[in-house]
Length: 153
Image (tube, rainbow, N blue to C red; front, side, top):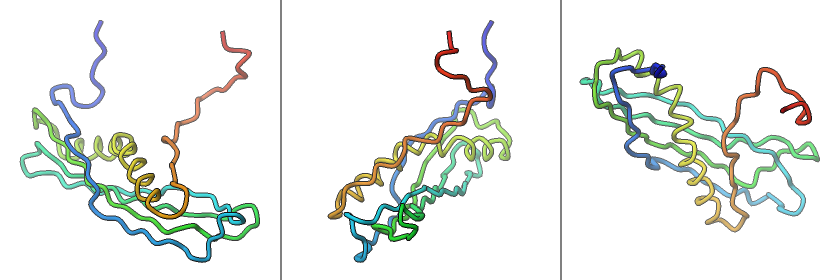
């Protein structure tokens, strides 16, 4: 028995290219690497441009590194960083409704493009005089039921 395709049973979607479209980086001169320890998060947003023929799309992913207070309760980030990535997709068979394509792209782009974002953030921050920021691999959804490791057989 074959597993049915969840999204496009008669279409083949493909990520073709990811590139860095825009970057804004600024060091914070008041940051003290020995005393400041802010926490970071990555905030993303997406916008989708679907071709008239529905056989290609461009997805723009904006990503901002946001900082929150460290152990001392103050927020002194080491730098400000925002990026825009451009992801190009195409389909072998453009027979899918535009709304379905946009839904698929919205759902999947962050997961498909995240490794590129991670690499760009590390490379950009490595060029400063601070240690590079290696962002988390990706958020993993929690399991419905968690059990201690000793209970798993």
